[in-house]
Each structure stands twice: as structure tokens, then as C-alpha cells.
Length: 250
Image (cartoon, rainbow, N blue to C red):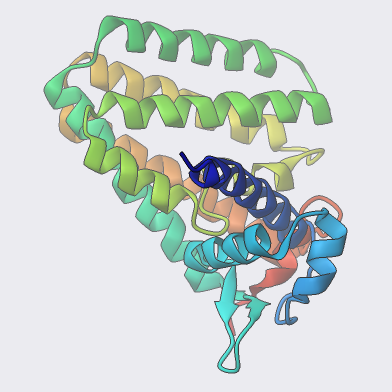
């Protein structure tokens, strides 16, 4: 009996690792926007064979971070400010739908309890009078966790799958631009506003107020739109090197 198929999961795992590492490199500015990807250089840099590297490049092209060149190969994409704004708007729409479905269908008590615990931990982070880098990292992880729980609350595999697709669009994640706020005078105030919206939407879901829950989540995405404008205007490359991939509006 052949053992060849057993190698497939390992190859898939290597492709995922390469995909994650390449995404980090792109958003960190290590691979410049518009620049052609040197496949052999990546093989040497990542210590992986060409097969998982090619699979990773294909997945990142599907994700939207790379573009397929006419003569073959890939280049790092650049994005208009409108592209990113539309992706954030789409996430707000999808999360609004998830919140409405959660309110209308009801949510298991164990999931609601987990969401409350997540928000309590965010409250604890925001109790600090000033937020350092570690506190921001904690906030980002907890914020992403709450948004994952929100998708789970909808009770729809279809919505969860499409929401995951939207969140993976370049710069569209719930914490995509939060890091730009770090060390700014109004950073904590902005996060407190976001946290209040988290609490309100969870309350609306528990009270089975579908329209209110949907409207709150769509409004919540407006904070990300504001952060996008700040990121593009300040072009804070120290905090967020990937901003260089976003072209300002004309």
C-alpha cells in the first residue's frame, strides 16, 4: 500500500505557513507594492520548497494581496483608498447581518457568556489611564475574539464563511487600523467608544432587537473608516508599514 498521499497534509501545512509569513512580509513593507515577487528568493528566505511557495502565492492572489502578471508570476498589489473603504463597508454590512440573525434566532447561553467575558477583559485593559504597546496588543486580540464570537452567534455556516472571507480582505479586519491609534492622545477615548458599541450590540442581541443590533454593527464599522482616513493622511509607516500599499484619493 502506497504512502504517497500521507505527504499531502504536510505539503498543505507548509503552504499555510508560507502564506502567513508572506502576508506578514507584505504588510510589514518587506515586499514593496508593485514589485514582482522573486520566487527563488522566497524559497531561500523561507526555507521551503517551490511547491508550497507557489501554493501560498496563489492563495494570496485569491485573497487580494497579490496580482497575477500577464507574463506569469506575481506582484504585490496596491490599493486605492476607496478599495479599502469598500472592504470595510462590506464587513460592516456582513457583521450587521450576523448581529440581526443572532438577535432574531437567539444565541446559546454559553456563547453569550463567553462574549460577556471577552468584553469584561477589554474593560480591564481600558481601565489603564494610558495604553502601551502591550495593552494595544491585548486589545487587538480580544477585539478580534469578540468579532469571531459575533459571527458564531449568527448560527449560519454561510454567513460565517462569507464573513471570514470579507475579514481576510486586505485591511478589512476589525483591528486592521487600530494600531495606528497607538500612542495618540485620543487612542483610549476611541477604543472606549468602540467598546461601548460592543456592549450595546450584545445587549440588543440578548433583547432580541434585530434591527437595532444590525444598525449598531454597521455604525461600528465607521470607526474603522475613520482610522483608515487617519492612517492614509498621517502615513504612519513606523506603526503600520502596510499603509504604503494604499493610494490616497485624488
